[in-house]
Length: 144
Length: 120
Image (cartoon, rainbow over all chains, first blue to last red):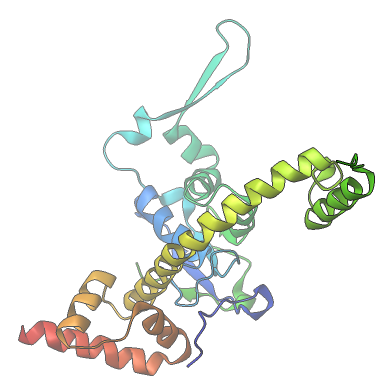
């Protein structure tokens, strides 16, 4: 046994691919699980200054659910700067138009806000339908 | 008392200081006063972080043990509780290293922990 704590270096990390079907999954709960995997905190050789996380593929992003009345009541606002220029879009509308964005943003906001965090985020691949172009990576279904 | 001239000694002192400050950003590695301030702060951080290192390492080991436990359908608090009841004296550093280097042994440790909890 080595006396010193093991630290992985980035070329040493072998990354796996996970696949998750987002159908009927609660948005935040799903995102929390995904964020852990992207950060690498599910592996015993987790190293804080190195991206030890795996890749995650999300399919059926258009079928995620939100509990309660959040889909209708939660809105994203943006202000154009002009008087009366406040625009608001409900989560239901985002889900319809850009389901990928909804899942991506939920996960991104759970990741560290740092260079490393942005790098981790690149390992997330979200698709609105059931298809994804990563069969060659042999993704393993993620048990939730 | 003869009058003392400072010239050479001052230059020497500045060079020593700037040698210490090598690699710092911008004027911090070039100007005497900036270098002095930065070096003092560096010392403060070094002192503080030597102490914080112990806590941070323990946190890292706990994070790693948590990951290893979850892979085996357990959780950290449960595992540690069981392992203590079982009389295992390994510290968190060694447990985390075992989890990385020797997963089979860690399997056994989780079993031991579960057994100790079942009998307790």
